Image (cartoon, rainbow, N blue to C red; front, side, top):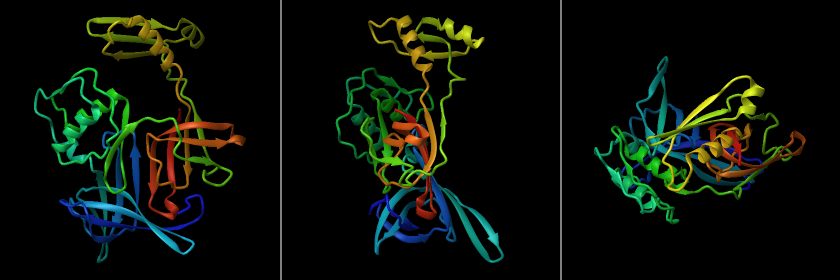
Length: 326
């Protein structure tokens, strides 16, 4: 399938066997959308409208794309259905169903009080052990970074929130394939795809922004019992106001707290360029991935990292996306 060329698409859902995770009964889809967000612990969700009631069952959404007489079935999302809302029109019922990602069981299950993750262990191993306890399969086998400091679970910690702490500590990100496999990998700079307006991959309406207004010029940093505050006096004078930010950190041995605060303030004063746009669907692009965007006439050219996206289960799976300059 050449995703840069035109194609037609239709969508179906299938119920999924809880034990084998294989497809079962087909459910026609009237409409729907899939949302993915790198900042959300669940990473993705979906909503579908259907004429058939689905109650707390596993569901898989497919796109069937047809091009030049051939067709391909692409899994887009696998997740757990919540209790649906029913819209009644005479004798006809339509059900609106919210679907949660395959990580939902880990978000609902709290770890035991005092649960402890030791340092010196690969983050991948720690997350796999956490997910094994709630029946989630982690497919990654890349050999991740090692946890440098131990993590002790706080009250109310879930298996998912703890896994996300490990992920953040080692500097990796997680994503879910369309058939429901959970995978993790390091952030990469090599783009997985390229888009531009010349071949209609990107729609011409693009929002290009940089939030300088909210940038702090004062930063207070606390590490244990030590606190320091640094200020950018030039910025305060030019803007005529102080904008504060606060951070609590675990300071690495041998690092100056003041030096860290000054360096961190400089980072916070350089916000990422953010693009909001709509593009053609591409099956290999997910939040966390780097992409190349080239629009010379709009003075946009560079590598951007996808933050979130929304895929409409309609004509050609049109995709709304937000990406930050990498």
